[in-house]
Length: 409
Image (cartoon, rainbow, N blue to C red; front, side, top):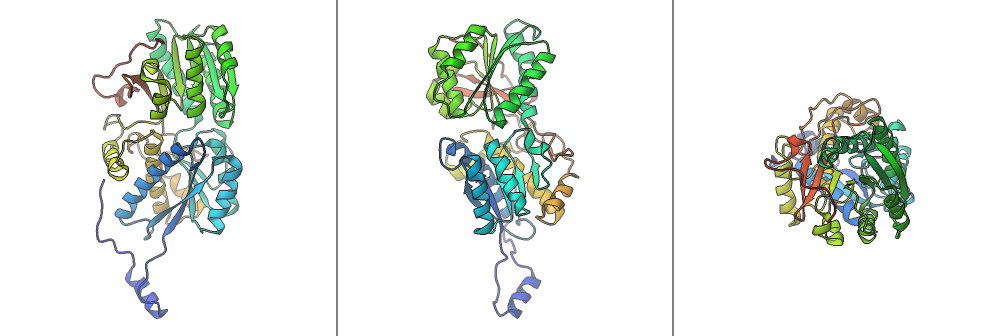
């Protein structure tokens, strides 16, 4: 991470203009970025973690001279549900005069917030929300630098085929799978593609369960899954419902051959709620973590060092590094566009061609016609001895790392 000192915030022309106006030397107005995330409610911890990724990227960009000759300034906009996403975007546009938006941990919020941002002709750069239809809308102000739900689904099938089936000494053909998911556009969209891809691969989807992310009872879902006797249970959701599912599986004495958590299950909150002994062997598909190899994610070590220096702790969740990488990609697109105007940034982003493993999260940058980055992907980790360890793909895993037994204690 390179830092540049003695940044000149004003050009000579700007100083002359200020003098002519009688105001003397003045600092150029910052570029204001509205950071849309849940900063209150049950997911506030993870909205804050995503924003920490933004903050670290902004620190780096500003230390290197800023963007378009100006410093970047983050303005937090609290949105813990889709309706609040609309009102927060409107407030930031009217009251705070933000120039663009970065978001968000929750797909449902991204859906409404980006639509509201369009009404103000403001760029909405998505770093973390994964619902497929966010890009399929063709919204002219929307660009996503992180992977989408299809990547979650395809990674699920790859992990079941290449890690889980061999560990269970079975072939994916005929393998019995139960799909459980939270019922918003996030979990529903991913589960639909998971089912399609698993069926095409020859696996037997023995059931699909859906539940609200804020449910307080998953006994019926687990009972139905238990009766279906799957080899693998796949859960797509958020931290609260993911933790609840694991507790309920344990309480009912349900012991599938393997448990695969998608998008959740890899945080200290889960470790505290479930405990290391029961988590041992559970696989989690998520954003690349800071234990990946430097070859897979160049700069991940520098990211971790910067995080520890600023926040005096280790990352809470991997979403922050994806947000950091996405913000760096955004800055490249804006710089190339020479503007914050959505249509100009889209045109510039469409020309980006960065290979895989260019950024700390392992991402590259290549956008399709819907402005979805097709060079952004997920990795798979496993709980081993009370820690998350990256195990897939192999080139992301550290030397000596191997997959441990998957069965429940």
